[in-house]
Amino acid sequence: MSLYYLIKNLDKTKYEPVVLFLHNSPVVDLYKQNNIKIAGILNINDFSHTNIYWYRWYHAKYFAKACLDSLKTYIYVANKYLKEIKPDIVHLNTSSLIAWAHAAKKNNIPVITHVREPLSEGYFGLRRNFVKKSVLKNSTFIVPISQNDAKPWAKSNKINIIYNPVDHNKFNKHIDKNDFLQKYNLDLNEPKILFLGGLSQEKGTLIAFKIFEQLLLIMPEAKLIVAGYFDLNLSSKYSLKKYFVRNRYNLKVKNILENIKENIVFTGPITNVEQAIAACDVLINPFTVSHFSRPIIEAGFMSKPVIASRIAPLDEIIIHGVTGYLIDTNNIGVWVEKLYGLLTNKKLNETLGKNAYELCNKTFTVDMHVSKIENLYDKCY
Image 1 (cartoon, rainbow, N blue to C red):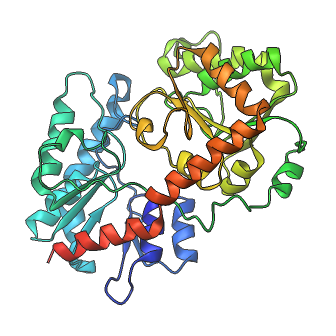
Image 2 (image 1 turned 90 degrees about the horizontal axis):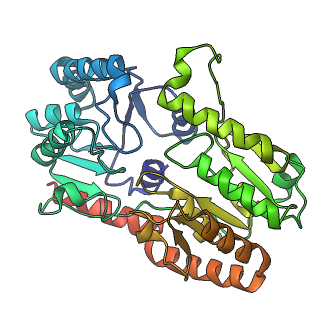
């Protein structure tokens, strides 16, 4: 979405964007519908090594494919598309596209690498160091979306920190929420909490459920809206697969879900995020690993307070006690206390929401983002 906002708002008298996709997804349709020129859908993997997705020991075959695909990309795939498109600048939308950066640099094309997620530490730091050095060597400019994401290249003069933008025309406090409430049979006066993580260990589904379970003891009428892909997909109890990390996590989620399912609304993946935010009273982000959260900014533009994990880079987009709360994920009781306060104290809720809007309006507008990116494009020549 950040790339989409950038492309839609670029000065088209100066820039002609072409987006090359590695994989097919609903995002491709979004770009096509908005007359954005696309290329590819290559069905090849990049070399992902970020906090959200990196290859662990039990991902051996996926890691091998990523290595093979990256090699193929560098040897001939990237060169093929660079010759066809003839770009003046290559703007990479993630640090994982290191093979494309190598190929562009080899062809003397300026490279901007957008770092949208922090690099993973991994097991021994070898892959992290490899990605770090590759990005530094082959990028003309490196664009992390937070101070935290910039740390691997902190000493480089190539760094330009530019926060992700949000379209305040789409996300604002005047959005109609009635259709969303009716679709999911939600009462306007019920206390409603929104969690946009689906089933994800990294985004903290289990923590969200633990918090909500405790909240129901003092607020039994509360509802938790869970948006995003949610499929427990547990193996048979006789299968050894249940002992793998992901399956063990899903089992814990399933067990606690039995106690709270009557008060949970599952929406599945949604495109009308703004309506979901409009319908809720508070957004929660109990992340277990550090990564940027667009919904926090979206909620801010809609004057909604947020409670999130006390981890970087969330501490860059939430001012504790002013625009929301930052809480350690181990302190379930504090989460419940702050959540209960925001759900019962309308004045407190509105004050934090107003402060969040003011912060977002100063820091995360599309115009501000596009201006900074265009400035980097101009510096490439």
